[in-house]
Image 1: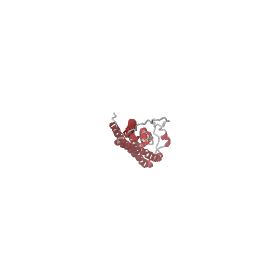
Image 2 (image 1 turned 180 degrees about the horizontal axis):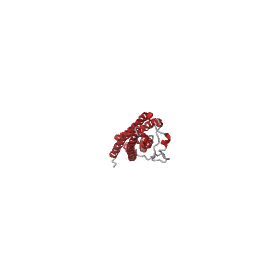
Image 3 (image 1 turned 90 degrees about the vertical axis):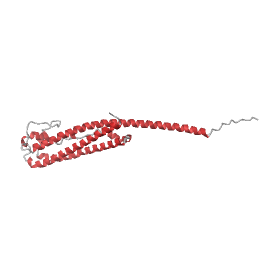
Image 4 (image 1 turned 120 degrees about the vertical axis):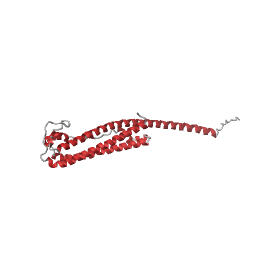
Length: 247
């Protein structure tokens, strides 16, 4: 009879399994750390990209705000001149200037602010704000965006006031004559002739003056808020450059 000899494999000690588990754990943990570090690096890179883009946008905003403030100064001067000429004893002899200045009243596009907010919209709508780790920077960005919205809300208010002023204008100015003071591209032009005012314009002059005061006041208010926004934009630029070491 043939006898078979069985080979017995030595049983591994529990410490062997423990070290296998420990090595596997460290391998997985190291992979997790590497992936986490990579995500942090990518997020930090995106954060820097957002900040650089935001700085460029705000620089454009500050340039626009400076132009708007300057244009608002000019607009105020023109509105004052219109008031003075129309209420002078020589108004009927100065109508070429009166009509020319009157064409500027409804023209507000050049005086209104349009923010360069492409980056801001990404920060708000694509979750970009969560990438910004400095709460001072985040608060400053949110406050700046809120100030922009305040200024933009004045656009509708100004348009409403101008529409009201337009209702009284036909009692002062001849519509056909006023149309001649704009060229084919609707750009105001000066004419070397004095078209007549409406025959009974003086009876409506006080109401016209009152409406014109409202136009002036909203112009002043817009300029005031533009100056505030400009200061906030400048402060935000300084904070971003300081916190991110950007020259």
